Image 1 (cartoon, rainbow, N blue to C red):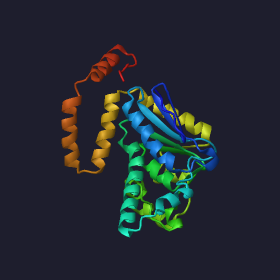
Image 2: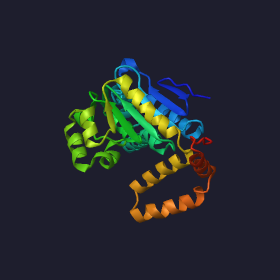
Image 3: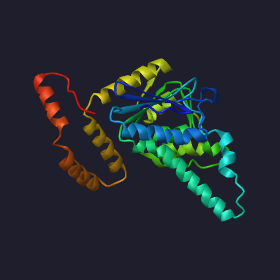
Image 4: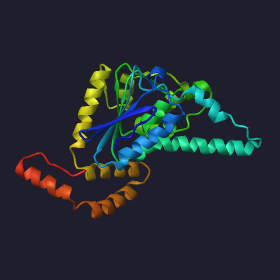
Length: 271
């Protein structure tokens, strides 16, 4: 059963799960319910065999304006008289927010972000956790946290250097300047740009459909290896893939791929 949420719209068609941020009147700003619902949605994608790939997009004029500043009262407030306990609670809250967005990265299925309009602050944290990113050429992106006197704390500074390199990441984080979808393509943050939202979604869905047609076991293994290799040495990564394929290589998917190639037909894989 496809879950229903207060701040998200979720659909599943042709093996593609589509998760849409759905607070268009607030530029899809990330209020407290949205954080938890993002984790619930991508846990559902992870656990649903029929969902082989996911697309993350935003309803309305903007992808996401970042954290809803009204939520700051909940984060910074509290009547706890002990300052240490208050700070411990804040730390646990931040770790919870990190886990909400890390659910995208931990999802075994590839997640493709489709960004248009504004992609600000927390939206960069969120899309940095995706497998691939695509945008309209005129999308406006920004690591905004420095402009409100804080350090980005839910993934941007940890993931972005692996995507665009250390130097340009530092420039964007220290200055908080805007950069366009076209610049994002040039620095490697997005794979491809499109002229408008309709073309963006059509292009991303086409890529998602190509992934959905591949062996689910192979695709899930690829994501597992890429994430492991990012955080381990080459030797560790080679050792892990040897162990992984010793367990996973002899599969029905392999037999189906070989049979389909011999018979010159598209393969049909089980979920």
